[in-house]
Length: 98
View 1: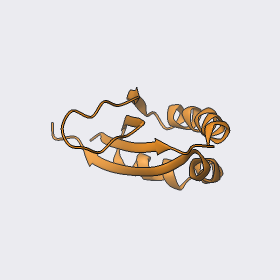
View 2: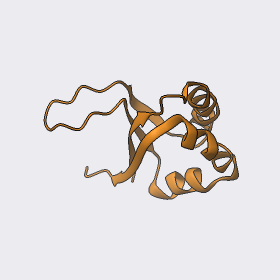
View 3: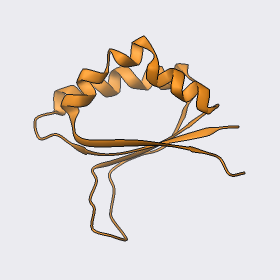
View 4: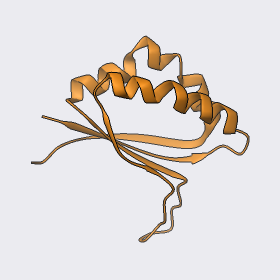
């Protein structure tokens, strides 16, 4: 059963360089894990008052693969860039209902 990772985030004011490095490092790792990025980009709030700069929705072959991706040495190396790139970041996991 596939698993979906959803990330919402706001960029850090001085994080552009770290963001570029993070994206350049993480996109190939997502591809290697067999993840498909369905949506990635700016966000317009339609209901509620929270505002986010980024929503990324990624589909992984399974929850186990998703967790392996997040705990891999290659991803762990990217975490300092993630911390510098984002002022706020939360990631959720959801299994497919169908």
